[in-house]
Length: 268
Image (cartoon, rainbow, N blue to C red):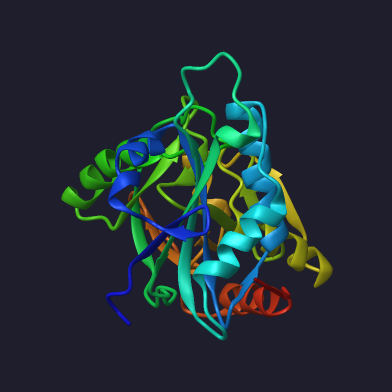
């Protein structure tokens, strides 16, 4: 199962006749999720992301039921896997795009386990176009900046704006812990599903979540830094540029784990 790779277009297997239309994937957006026993956390958030991005890019959206049917079709009973849902159209040259012009490509790959080791990241000035949309072309910019960071001995890249305010990582949201509260950068960034779920759960568990600017020059104010995405709910950051964080205790990791465990699973 480790080499699993399955793709379906609107709920049916791909054929060679579909290959030309897949060239239009760049004109679209996507969401990614981890499935465990045919369940996913935050299904509503994924559907809202897809609907909102479709309205902004295309002026229309697909029914939630159609997308859920596609997810159910490609998964089997009790299956664990990774799913990526692309919404795209070949009708980008038309003055008006309609619901019937939109297509759903679902890609299934093996389930991914969370990272076990803290990462080191290097800052880079980069502000994404339409940061609120997880659009398909985002990967091109990510790879270039990530490669520079890796060449410098780091694991990944962390984006900052003109004022050196932290926004997000390459494919993850970033957060900080000051010993009492979780602090999330207020600088525009993609609102990741996991960080939204954790924020709600943290509040429900009595942990305050604050949104404010986080300048690179003020990292000393925070005890720990962490990152989240569809795979990682408590990924630890050991270093940002030359600033080191203390990971001698597991307080933050425990806080995030408790929050994650109380997030319910949704059936596909």
